[in-house]
Image (cartoon, rainbow, N blue to C red):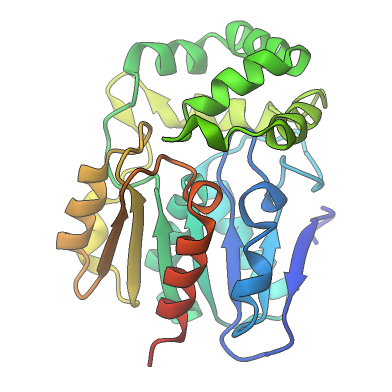
Length: 274
């Protein structure tokens, strides 16, 4: 695809109203966020879960990564898969990409599901630390090197993502640790951070355009999300006409991993609604 090899999971036989499940940034991948969910969701839809360029088993080109880069890539991916239209389910960074694409090309989107989505506000979480990591590349790279060498540090970082630390299983730590030992695993994330995080706020902020969203939209959010405030989700619900909002209690930022049964049920119900 444009010289890039893109890895994706695929499931389901039905060809009507296909679904793209789009993972987030950091150490995420298609298998981490959607490996267990793609099967249940594909009972009703042909489902695809790609690894973004720079992540998972997809190619990791040396380029400047940004939200705009991924929005453009999403259109090309749909073309390569032969999808004229699809429903988009995006978590965190994947949510911002899905939202940006829906604003740019609403005719190509059936339904939109924003899960703990980036792009719904401009304030930088943990402002000083985030800005330092974005603007001091050696510090950022050193942090990832440490995570790649220490399972204990990987476990510590994962506990910030979940509400219930019991979700940080040995298997999950091992899976993330294996990925982070790969020397190029963090390049795309660090590049995106440099592009995205500014001292005066986040570059990707669609709040002023949310009233333009013209496709059926579900906003799904963990009540205890430490990275994307639930207040952003509530505001987006007010601004996106006809949108639905579901806030799951006792849930952090990685909703498909922390509440997989609820995620699959709510998303499938929304996507099959007449």
